Amino acid sequence: LYSQVEFADTSIIITEPYFNFSSIQESMTEILFEEYQFQSALRTNAGSLSAHHFFHTKPSELCCLVVDSGFSFTHIAPYCRSKKLKEGIRRINVGGKLLTNHLKEIISYRQLHVMDETYVINQVKEDVCYVSQHFYRDMDIAQLKGEDNTLLRDYVLPDFSTIKKGFCKPREEMVFSGKYKTSEQILRLANERFAVPEMLFHPSDIGIQEMGIPEAIVDSVQSLPEGFRERLEAELRSLVPAHLPVSVLLPANPVCYSWEGGKLLAHTPDYDEMVVTREDYEENGHLVCEDKFDI
Amino acid sequence: MVLEKKSSARVEAGQRRVLDEATRQRRLTRQLEALEKDNFQDDPLSSLPPPGPTARLPAFSESEEPEKKKRKTRGDHFKQRFRKNFTTLLEEENLSEKPEPNYLSAAAPPSSLPPRHFCCVCGFPSHYTCTTCGGRYCSSKCLITHRETRCLKWTL
Image 1 (cartoon, one colour):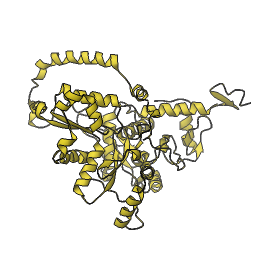
Image 2 (cartoon, chains in turn blue, green):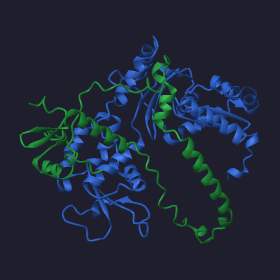
Image 3 (cartoon, rainbow over the protein chains, first blue to last red):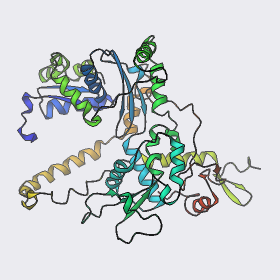
Image 4 (cartoon, each protein chain N blue to C red):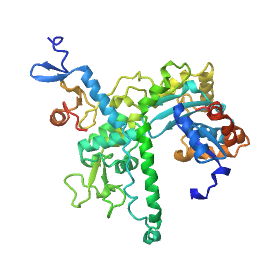
């Protein structure tokens, strides 16, 4: 598919993390223009594309705060009139990778050695984990024995011959006492299901001395320039009932949200002014990228 | 008495060995580092033929492979020689001296909420601390498991 793209007439939008190292930024520009010879390039943050998507679909909104939970970390990034407010960006070093590794570790300790099965455990995480609404209440339920334990799941691991992909055993087929007659390998998961994603909200549960997402949002908003917090609060107040101080939007497809934003951005009339063209780069080198791209 | 023996990592308390604060911190750091590992792994399904009618098609790409392999080894050599890890890059940037917001200043500060404690064996809320290593446990049953398996050693 990619071999059909003529790089020399193509513009590329590429995303990188907030505060990426400048040496990496530099080599990225070099690769894009010198190796691939792209006609023009725009380096940006995925969150900026999400923010663009948001401002595009809701033109009346002036500011938004993007919570971007990724592979290595979670970023909280405020945007005002589609401008990124750098002083308000907060990073929590908890991402999907850490959750998978933690789940792998506790399963390996408690039930079955799966330390070398990152891919399978990632699937387990995606299939059974959820964010608890009442953490301690769920903890109590997870502790119950037998049928009362509504949170208990038996996960059938894939053997890659008859079972290609793991799945949860349907509740009516679950054996609550004693062993299964069948030979499948089974993981029994209860508190792991919600204790693992809980690390996003309480990184201190496993000893990472950092704020969780809600606290970090407050911290981020408080660090913003004079007036931003009041404005955000006032706007939120007028939008939602008094007992609900925050409005949160989860895109229908969060994985593609920023990609869609990039697609929209590529079709805006200002796009040509945002990119750096190859001629520009050949004339001025990496400096022009440093000026133009705000990472 | 405790002061005298502080130089050794394990302080005697009666008959049981007790880890001091620094060692506990080191163990925690090591554990967190293990959680940060990338563990790159291929999709175990990628070696299986794709489902559907395409599964029977033979692979024709073999003739291209020798060329690809050659380039790969050269790239590996380059990578080995000029490899920089995350910490080197971070040091090179010299961020702590820069006034503008940067990677270091963006890190979320410690939480103001008190830490919650969970049994390191079963994962349920715990009220007790292992006197030897500082690990948490919830019942004597879990304490026995903890002593036999994790206490004073990391089985990672």
